[in-house]
Amino acid sequence: MTRFSGKSVIITGSSNGIGRATAVLFARYGAQVTITGRDADRLEVTRQKILKAGGQNVNVVVADVTDPQGQDRIIQSTLEKFGKIDVLVNNAGANIVDGTMFTDQSMDLYHKTFQLNFQSVVEMIKKTKEHLIKTKGEIVNVSALAAGPQAFPMAPYYAAAKAALDQYTRCVAIDLIQYGVRVNSVSPGVVSTGFMGAMGLPEPIQEKAKSFLASRKECIPAGTLGKPEDIAELIVFLADRKRASYIIGQSIVADGGSSLVAGMHAHDLKDMLEI
Image (cartoon, rainbow, N blue to C red; front, side, top):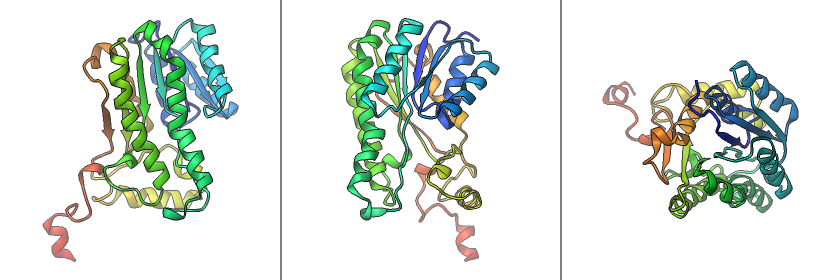
């Protein structure tokens, strides 16, 4: 399939989860893909999956996207290998944990959270803007359901950073569309990406938490966690000018219905009568 044949795509945070699935899908559609992250071994797994999917042009850059020099290496390496940038997917992000929650979260965590989830996106867009204008390219930012409007009190910094990203997406979309560059974002709900493991939770606890969320209507009405591939399909759709040309500055939610319910009305009358 050659839907993105000849297109050069950067996907940050592509060593696992949504980023990996997105890189594989772009490559399957014929794109030249730059994958990047901090873990060389996990990036190699992504590269092998891309090759298995039929991708041929893979550029691997081991770099920290929060480091300005790392950002420069990602961009320069892509230009040297592929000659241009057509699509930027700002996927790198995480709910960083340090053992604190709610308003007890530390200021050090505040800075780290905003640097990864918001500042690095701003910097990557600023540094790739001129190249994307040349190709009349696409930007897709990966936000999160935590951005609201519902509160996410356990991790207020992460929620605020993603909310900032959504508003930044809207602002940048208006600015760059005059040059032919489209900007949108996706807001995943609960997705099986290894995020709980990254938070340091043991495997049995992870499985219990996933089962809890999937089994309750007020959490995920669809009754199942999303897959990285679900979000990858949405990202690729938004990056496809032929299919999504009139979508500009939007944050598309993919959450199994989570954002549509609140605890009070998630259960029907039958549930209530059984209590």
